[in-house]
Image (cartoon, rainbow, N blue to C red; front, side, top):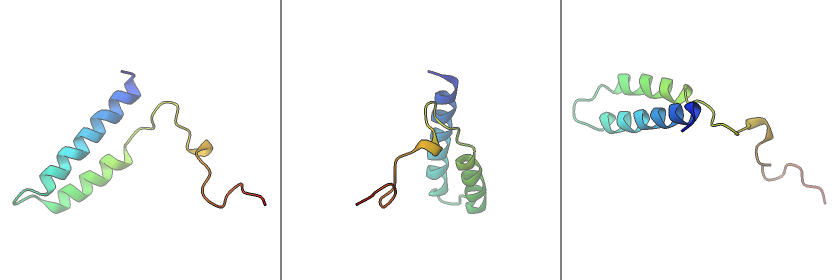
Amino acid sequence: MCPDCEDFACTVVMLGQLALYAYTFGADQKFADVVGGALAASLPELPGSNPIEGPEYPGEGWTP
């Protein structure tokens, strides 16, 4: 597995574990919110993905 793919997969697993923690009795919701936001913001881009050259959205690039 490429290093970027491994980082992405690890971060997604941590987000899943954090989600499970957030729904346990006595969980610290502020901790879950802060760490969840930080983990989501740190998600690396997958190799080969280019947000600039993504799919066209409805209404864009259409001519009659």
